Length: 178
Length: 380
View 1 (cartoon, helix red, strand yellow):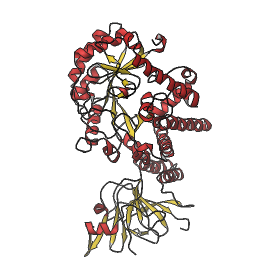
View 2: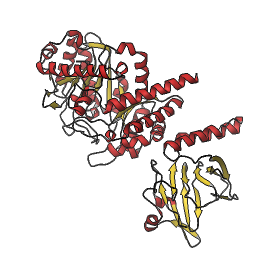
View 3: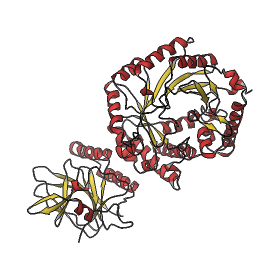
View 4: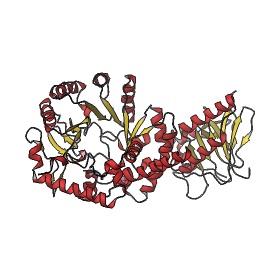
């Protein structure tokens, strides 16, 4: 299956597709060229479905809340992940990207040895400072800090582990069956 | 002649130091933004004398430099203008000077003047680049946000407080969180929203389409949730206006607002021509009512204006418009009558009621504020 990508309506992302899409070349990866970007992306997602992966970005104030919540949890054990998830859902609903019914938010930390896939994941948000890459066969999508992707239905990607001692810090919005 | 107790009090003097603006915003209502004429100290002297001899001033009194980019003239000019103002203000009125600016020309000289003279500054900026640079452009269509941010940074480096006016267009309504982030990121604590209005040469508004009112309410409600939850809360002029109009409801019942009463505002252009009511009327005219400029500070006394048939016709039409608002609009006790300029430019007649500005800037913001107050009260 070929994955296609679009920026979700009502969102503005910095940078271009050539900064985000990587294609396999030999043993490595290179930025997608203009023709490949044209083939892989849509100017807007098709209405009424999740046939393509939709990129979005989480506002700075919610990112700040996320890290404050983690700090509170680490220091006092009082981080309120449920309230935070509710606020994130409110934001996405305002943006007309509502969470599916009964979906569940999960905090995922991935180290260099960690294996993560997007099975049953509706959307994934990179809350870490460094970019995170999702991998499909011959194709990768780079999610910068604060960016998220609503997955295309039927498309599963692997989350590329960090190459060093860092952690990928992700929030997964999982479908109810997960 | 109009009854003396229906005139003034004068609370706001808007002086257009030049019609010129170094930007070319797509929604601007000014007709002559390429006109580089500048007001002279002689004209200013006559303006001040007109104002101080009118007997209309009520404190707090504000002198607002606006309607064109005021910082096109150097800070040294305003220093001279301030000395002149002080010398003509023999009654010792407390006067606040205020500049509404795009901030692109702010420099150290300006900051020194602003601090020395305790001048208030309002910066016009529409949020992040994808919103601001859509409409607030140079004459060759280039973006302006970088220059505005640089100006804001210079103000901050000199510890100068400023508030911000953002014009909301249709494109803004999907981005309350991004606007909120922008204000927080740039240390902005006081925000005012204007809506893209139909005024003068700007004959359409992106907010005039169908479905805009619910979108606007949704935007404003979301923004206010963010603003009220922030620590410290982000102050939003429209919310504060709603709060105070609820608190002062009885006082507004029989009073015409600043913009609706004759000589509540005096608007003076760079040649000394003056108008009253909505500042947007200055420099424009009506086929039916003639020029909205009623006279010139060098020639025409207040008394001569009050007997002028053109002014009497204008005031009568505006007064009838306020009466219609009073009779037909349940928001009147909180509003006091829609802005005459909007009525004229949208409806072609001052003796009318609802405008786009009423629907969005008054009614929607009021309803949202009331909803927030009730929720806050329920929580406490």
